[in-house]
Image 1 (spheres, helix red, strand yellow):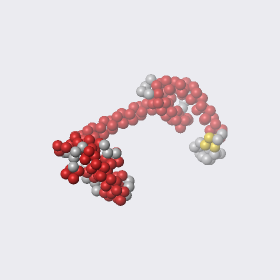
Image 2: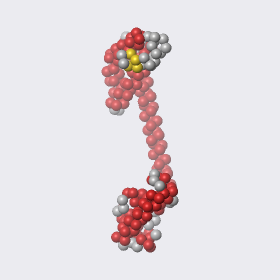
Image 3: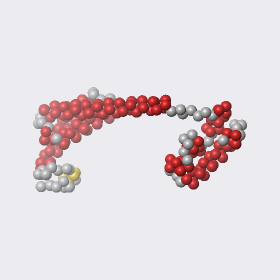
Length: 198
């Protein structure tokens, strides 16, 4: 008798209590024969019913995994092919249900995002200097824009910004100071007094 940790020909298998090396080898030989005789037929079947070769390959793999797990249920001879077609048909049904659920979830999430976005006022009143402010802001590095936006638009304090950015409060203080200084320089370039705009 074998134990679950005993490999056969270097291939560890999950063994059912009471299985012998001989019965495992016979099962493996039978499975390999079934696979050799039918895999191309099941692949063709799946290719005609799926959108991509990758999906068809997944269907074939799942079908033969079921066959391996339920090898005792797979009939002999010609009926094995019919059993595999029936199994592939069920696998395809699961595949399509999964795709449909994923599509429905995606549509539901997309609808929710659109509804939420419509409810939010994402515009910022920048007054008569809006275009100049935007031009100055757009010339800043992304890191400067991020820290300034988190403080100025999202209204986060330094501790919260530190958590969002994954840094320390002291680091945020330095980054914010430098970003404000660079923004002030950019504002001067477009003719806006930084003291007036704060």
